Length: 117
Length: 112
Image (cartoon, rainbow over all chains, first blue to last red):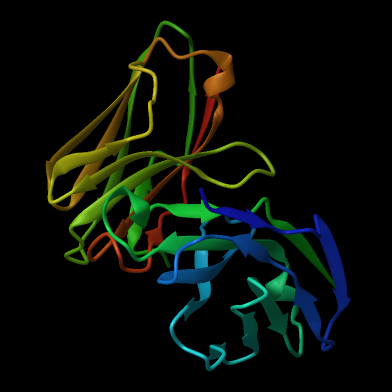
């Protein structure tokens, strides 16, 4: 079974600074997707960024980028120029690409990010 | 603004009540999901509907009964719930089961 580990229950960052959230995962599969979801107090889970395992290039979405290390099974999220609106719970998630019930998402326990003005 | 709409936003019900949660999307997505999320925990998958048929039931107690009347609508019928069922219930959808998920804002359920 796949597992996702987020070792930082809480993180804080000063506004305009950069912060990195850690995520490691365990799988025996070669084809999969990795995601970072953000859940602000409004409760909606918002997809921040996703990475296909077969792609070597790290995904980037504006101020959000990942450091995907497939061999090390590591998938960290870097937030640059942090803004107050980035404050939220961040979940790392894994999904197999092998089909059937394996399409379900496996979430990490989350990292609560605080942004200080 | 969310493209997956959940109603109601909040619900308080007694253990003998019957209530329903509603989820609606008009993005043409063919897979819809119910998740349960306790405070400060990740979401836990409950049910998956694919093309209006139940494809995954994660051994959820029968007091939770999903219904998918059409491709845009997913309901969760609640009956004889327990206080430990109090949680945020999230609905999600995607184009197909291997596409990114779009979540609604959830229904905060309290069982008294």
